[in-house]
Length: 253
Ligand code: SAH
Image 1 (cartoon, rainbow, N blue to C red):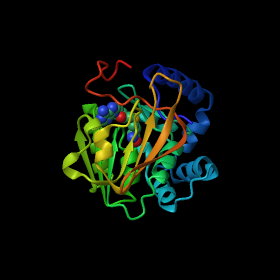
Image 2 (cartoon, rainbow, N blue to C red; image 1 turned 60 degrees about the vertical axis):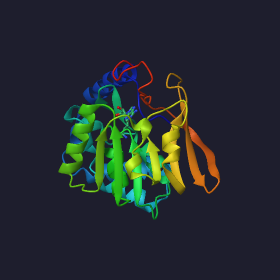
Image 3 (cartoon, rainbow, N blue to C red; image 1 turned 180 degrees about the vertical axis):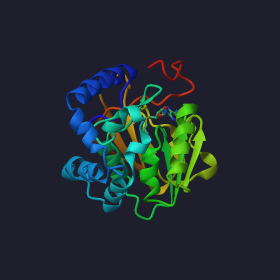
Image 4 (spheres, helix red, strand yellow; image 1 turned 120 degrees about the vertical axis):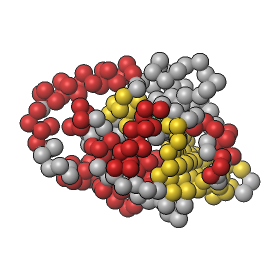
């Protein structure tokens, strides 16, 4: 369980990570000697993801390939492959590798052409999607995060990811319908514009619940010809989806 953390949790996590790094400096430094960090990535997939039941080979291959350490700051680089979320600034986090795998797997992306992500964050989840589908559209509300993610993705050579700064609650109507939609921030309800922008047969995954609760429920929607099928998957912990109608601003949570 868990994916992202609130600022207070991030601060606590930073302290824990510092203690961990000071205590296990040889391990931290040793792991980063190989600049490609392929062995760490393979270990991440083999030890954190496969044993928890993720079988989609496309997801596993993408996560073996993508240099996750390029999506975190050098300060947190040693923790890029650890089994948990990592702070990326502005009170946000890159999700735990297993949660990225779980959500991507649940979207059943075989044959999908267009995917929409709400909450670009570091850009890592978008990269995972872009390894699997031809076109990825991703929206981030915190402008500096969006800019940094776009730069990282361009440096890594992704040409099939389209980024936008704005409120993802409204989706990306000009590009709809989408074969899949992934929301990587929690909401008390599923934004209706996103349900509307899902293609028939498409899937939408979102953590639903009050962001001030300890955990939210990961919910999968599948659009049918006459409505939506809803499946509850597991408990997770995400930062809240910021909605313009709400008074809370980024950084205040
Ligand atoms: N998918 C990201 C992690 C997401 S963290 C990754 O792979 O790194 C959740 C992100 O959602 C944060 O960056 C936050 O700023 C963003 N967010 C929150 N509310 C949003 C909204 N209404 N529209 C778009 N992005 C939003």
